[in-house]
Image (cartoon, rainbow, N blue to C red; front, side):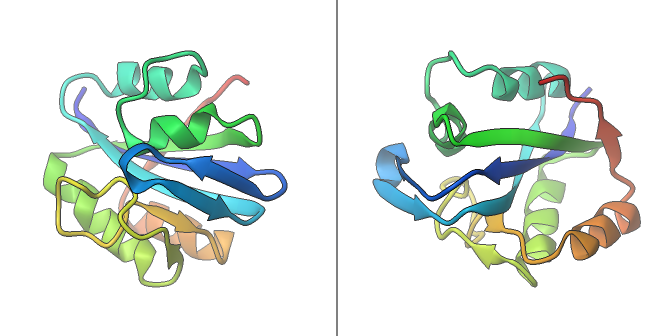
Length: 137
């Protein structure tokens, strides 16, 4: 299945993380939302994100490698790649973007956001027909 996915990530404590080409970024404690897409196998892409031990290729790989980070929920929907940017921009309207994160191949400000309110995320997920994926951690 090809589609768009959203990772709800918890960062416990403050973390300074070297994010590859973006350099070191300081993350405050709290919840973050990452929007990505997989145009071949959504299941394999999400499974890859859930593994800590992997070759770092994308910005998100650097963040998820940090011991202070944890994926707490995953949401997905079948969609093409353009939906990824539409959803990222929608989430970015009310949440703090981490500038340049995950958006080197598009015009978006970011694909990672510090979450202000879970209620707004829930509304976006519902209005855009996302499903929850069970995550075993």
